[in-house]
Amino acid sequence: MNHYYDRSNLNRIPELMKLSPQAAAAFLTFEKEIYHSSEVLPLKTKELIAIAVAHVTGCPYCIDVHVKRYVDMGGTREEIFEAVLVAASTRAGAVLSHATHALLAMEDTKLPPLTGKEQPPASPDCFC
Image 1: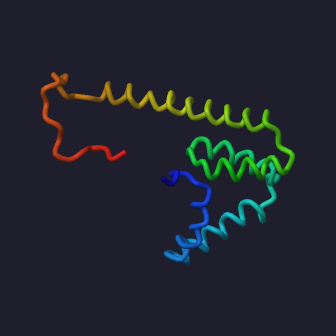
Image 2: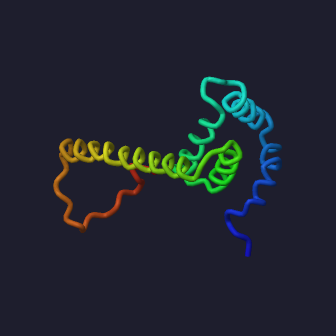
């Protein structure tokens, strides 16, 4: 059985790119611009940001690639873990902040309390 996240899966990216060459070229141009042409942030800092974002998005491929690049630039385990903790804290803070919307939704509701015997709607109000 093949593992779902097998590094060799990345070898199929060119196959995907052939399905939409213009979009693929635009993405690669964008990536090159951000990582190599723009010099506002040092490349090492960009890789540390990428590691934190990869943990938030949950992409094992990105974690693998960006950690290896960062370590090759002299990055340390402590720096990586602190960046991951910053990402975790920021994500948790966003969840907490969004809880204010739950309060607003509760205050804004004009529906009678649910009894547990209601039928689910024919189509969902939310697709997330």
